[in-house]
Image (cartoon, rainbow, N blue to C red; front, side, top):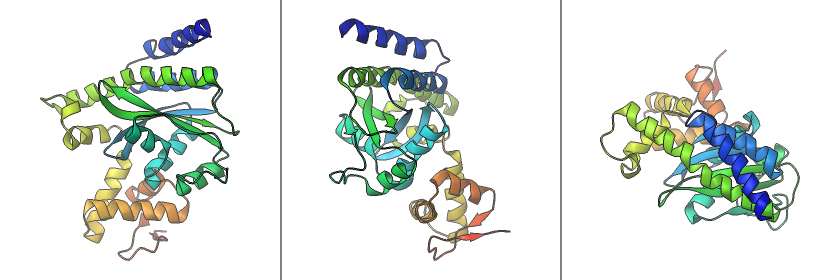
Length: 255
C-alpha cells in the first residue's frame, strides 16, 4: 500500500507542479483526482467565516455547479469540513440516516450524485477551503482512496496560496492577506462569482436594502426556482430578471 500511495502522491504532485500557478494548478489536481480516486467529479472551494467564497478549480462544469450549491443553500459538506477542520464523508446521501444538509442533498441527488466527500485544505494554521469529491454511486472511499484524497487536499494548499498572493498583488495590499480578515478575502471575491457581487449591488439599489438582505433575496429566488445563485445573478446583471420588493421567489422577468 505504501508504494501505491507514493505513486499516487507523485502523480498528484506532478499535476499541480506541471500547471500554471493558481486556478490552472487546482483544476489539474481535480482532474488527476478523478482518475486516481474512483470519483466522478472534484472541486476546490474557498471558505471564509462559514461561507463559500468561490470554486477555484474543478474537474468539469458539473462539479463546479455541484460545489456552488453549497454557496446557494449556505450548507454542505465543504462548509462543515472547514468548520470542524476534519474530513466530512457522506457515502450515501439517499440514506434515511442522512439528515445533515436537506437542501443541498436534494439538489445533488437531482443531479445524479449519491456520495460526497469533503476534506479541509490548510494553509499554515488556517483552514481556507475544502476539496470536494462527488460520486454518482453510493459507497465509501476505500482506504487507499481516502488516503489519496487526504494527500490531494494537502497539495491543494499550494494553488490556493498562489491565488491569495495574486489577489494581494492585484489589490496592492500591504499586509499578509491571511491576517486581513474580510478586507483581504474581499479581494478574492473578485476572482470568482463576480456576477453574484454585481447582482447583489443591483438588488441593493433597486430595492433600497443592505447587502445582507439583497443576497438573501437572491439566494431565496435561486432556491425557489431551482437555479444556482450564479444563474440568477447573471439574469439580474443582464437585466432579464428584476426582483420585486416583496419577492415571493418568482421575480419578474423582462421580455
